[in-house]
Amino acid sequence: MTNRKRTTLRIAVAVLLTIIVLIILVLLFGAKALRARFEATVSRTLGMDVRVEGGARVSVLPVFGASFADITVKSGGADVATVANMKIGLKLLPFLIGKVRISRLELARPVISIIR
Image (cartoon, rainbow, N blue to C red; front, side, top):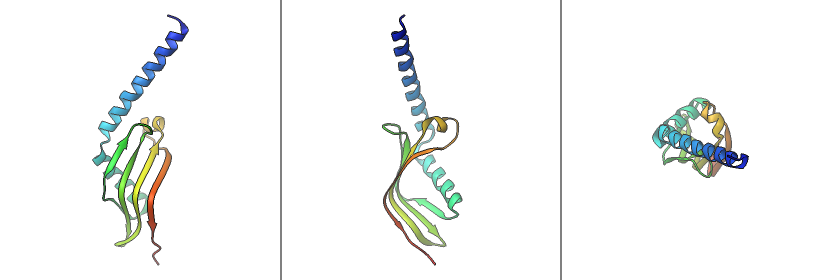
């Protein structure tokens, strides 16, 4: 086998393995589990109540990540922030070893309230 064929074969195997890993990740971290984990982690980090009222989606292509709809952040019962839609892009390799590295964060129609 020539070097060119070996290189092509290696690339094809790497792409196939990546696709298989991504499919497994999507199955393991379904939308409901992702939504609950997101709410708990962000609530703990902010020290406020964070709820995702709309849907949650995991995406593999074109960017590995997640999106959430209708997010509300409350403190003491009052709305501090609302976001119509949030898209989070994640770096795949750190994610595979258990670390979360955000590559992109996109907010649609954010509203922030200042409470005295």
